[in-house]
Image (cartoon, rainbow, N blue to C red):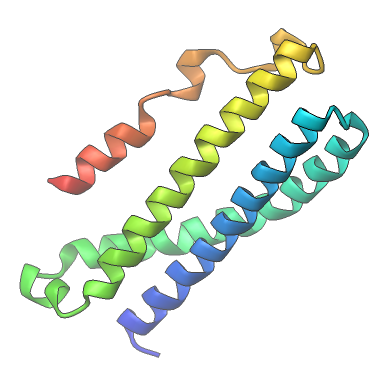
Length: 138
């Protein structure tokens, strides 16, 4: 399998995982609104199962990114679907982050998470995604 085909495959895998995480975050949001706290533990276990897969997919995409950045603009322009998949993945990740943050705030408001267990704003790096978008635009 050539470089571009492998990159497309790995980006597709990343998108699939991101969609699963988004679906999970949406389900958690619905559970929070309905007040069904007993099902939140199941969602947490599902998330823990997804995280190793996400880490593996991100590691592969990072490797591709290094090779992709070494290509000329002309070589990159022959593969517009890769740029499209990267943008879609970024959008999915942003949606997951925002929804997960809302869910955390909902849990805090209801007192289901002690405030000491939430990472500080500095550690969360609130502008990380905006900085990532800015770096990609250059």
